[in-house]
Length: 99
Image 1 (cartoon, rainbow, N blue to C red):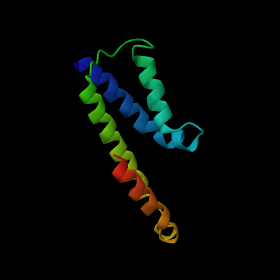
Image 2 (spheres, rainbow, N blue to C red; image 1 turned 180 degrees about the vertical axis):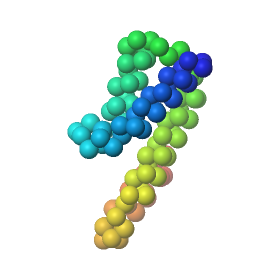
Image 3 (cartoon, rainbow, N blue to C red; image 1 turned 135 degrees about the vertical axis):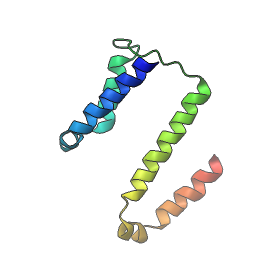
């Protein structure tokens, strides 16, 4: 378990040192993390021994979605949102009851 955490921590440290140049290229951060996960996971070198149940994966997916939505909302242009406020209202009124 400590080896798994050390591998992930080293990758995050490495990525944080080159994140600026990666974001200026055609490669995005999520693509880098996905490729790294495939490389060290069971598809690649099989270095990680992380086992997760269905509930843990669902919780992780919900937390990830919340972070992505919060980040997008933080970078939203308020003037554009005020001009097109009918669209988010419609999406929320349709999407929330469907859940």
